[in-house]
Length: 398
Image (cartoon, rainbow, N blue to C red; front, side):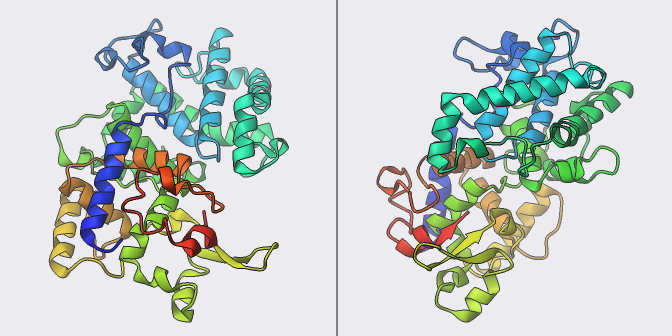
């Protein structure tokens, strides 16, 4: 990225790609309890959100509960696999009369059966042709395929550590005779909701959910599904941070977005001070077994929260701070990298949700790891400063 105008073009193009890409929205078309709110083309009948299903619950509340659970589960390497697993387990449990989203206590009463169903459905996914192709693309053995997270093979840690926490909160809200959606809408702002989901003493998920997943849920509620629509700028389309995951971070890194605001990144391979700044705090230096060449693994979420080094003048800094006070409801002393995305998105009449979908599309289809980028066919190749940068493409990985 040579200048700020190119950064703006990048954001606008990602927004355009995202608006036409719905592949990364949690699919509910295969979930039986939602079949009555889907059109023939699988688009959602949002006008039915305030209708009740055959068990007497509003569809918007049922969908909120399903997405809440999905945000906790959807933190593994294969997002589509996680969504298939949740859909298949949901369908099987409901066929057995375990209506766990309507009455979570049934999930715990039949926990032995739940264990069996999750294990069987996980094995079915593992044997599928889709998963075999996924493993080939990721260059891993199918035997290592695991949706339980953290390389755990124990059903107890997965089911009680991932499924149980959100279902417990849903049960608490039922006992309180209140809805989960009203709990979410009751927060001061969309960004506060992302913090609340993780950190609240009573309702927070703690270690069961990460920053990325918390913001992903907020994105689904506001942008993807339109379940929260409040006449307040703090609940607008740019009032929450972009979910920082490895795909989004890889695209922002390779295109030069990060490099523009952190000039020291451009010198990391040959300048000791720049290397010292980044290696260890946000990257781990490693050595290739094949050619002893140096490369760096970087964790995208560690970029989040980094104060920008350069790229904007003092006037723009003040504009961004005023924007954040209005949209996030908080004052910020320093401009952090994620704030730039929200500010430019708002200036260019783009949406953080669409930008995230665009990043996901590029990151999963074109801007791949291991030097296998498909730059020639990538929609961003005209404005990407990394397409001809061999070191950036081969020496850095997420």
